[in-house]
Length: 384
Picture (cartoon, rainbow, N blue to C red):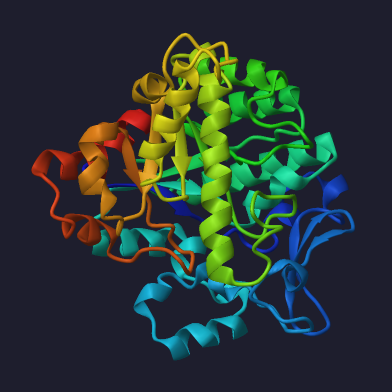
């Protein structure tokens, strides 16, 4: 199949009882599960009695207000009226976009927009990195990966699962990565940009995992998410205002991740391993590479062990996802390398982009840049 238009960052909506059905029986009473509270709010049981309660963490929520998770599947609020958006807070998670739950509906939506293939990241599964028990986390990631394999199975040449790896322990992470690649046929894995139990992703403890990923020729997508169960950069400062928090936390966390992967020496230590920085916009990367270069180029500042400039490392093995409405794509495409640019619909999340390929084509890019942005970068990153 020809892959000319590739969604590098789509999402699934996991069934609320996924882990109850797919985890080992001994974990089913304490497994991740979306629950309804007495006031009609939806909360996520993360692990045992640990609850992710968005009534307490959501900056847009007032104390005591009911929080429903329908917005997780309310694709494309930018095309909805203010009244429609205000009504999303009353929708349940299960009322989200059908294609998030069902691959057959998803393919219909992809066909309408001319999308050849989509790489799929979690929604509820983005919280698994906050679990604390190693064995529990391992079983939760295994359950998610098994379900995701089943979701993609009807369209194996168009829907591609991105594996969850339990970073609570490098040993279990390696085991799950091998299983996802060798047994399930996944072509990529993802980690969050934020630390895992106090260890940033450039921590030496994770070197064996990166070594295995490089040997398997499996790219690593770095993907954050809002309202996480652990600390995030900027979340302490922007406690009020959904817009400010969303702008700050996603980008700040990804800037930190690029610093970890590039200046922290991970990419140079594993020079055949590809890294993708996702869902945090892309225009900032040019200035950030300049800033990293400036600190490595100055003997008075450079205390890294890098032998190459950060911009050279990025050009060799890194990719970044732009949103389909970023005008800086045309300005920066040649500067950062158009075959290093990805894009994503963020389907079926509320802040996603309906008609994303059309939005990209409306940017007035040169034919080469447009072709690379729509599919060329993703083919390189994901190895299609």
